[in-house]
Image 1 (cartoon, rainbow, N blue to C red):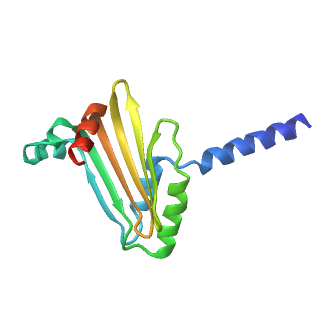
Image 2: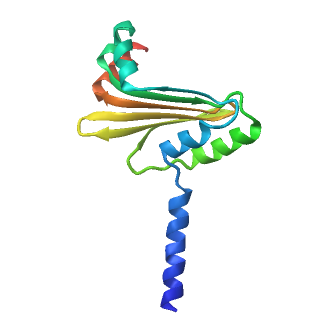
Image 3: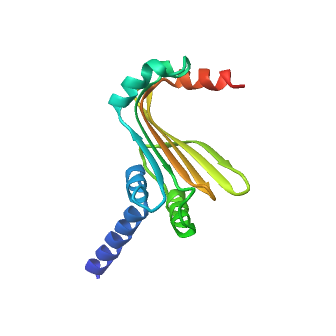
Length: 151
């Protein structure tokens, strides 16, 4: 009886772990789909582009950007992405903004490290699903300055 109970508990834990979606698995699984538009910019390219960036962006230390756009994908692919994106859970990320409109949901997650934001993930769910993943070293005060300047 104990053996069956232990197997059942382990099975439930495994099912829960497998149902959670990480940002890397989400990006990697959909970057190979037909008609997906993807952009991946590493730190070297970011360093080369720094002199051409606007004044507002120069304070940010962005070391990488990954973008997926599923606008031109089949409805089946979009639906699968939407379902998986709704299940995005990672203990390292904190939900920062959750916005719901008629046909679209947008969620912004932050990953903190010491006094900086290390990663920003923006997931859009709906008719035009997308994923934006920024890596770097961003001061929370810089985000506040940027948002205050746009008001």
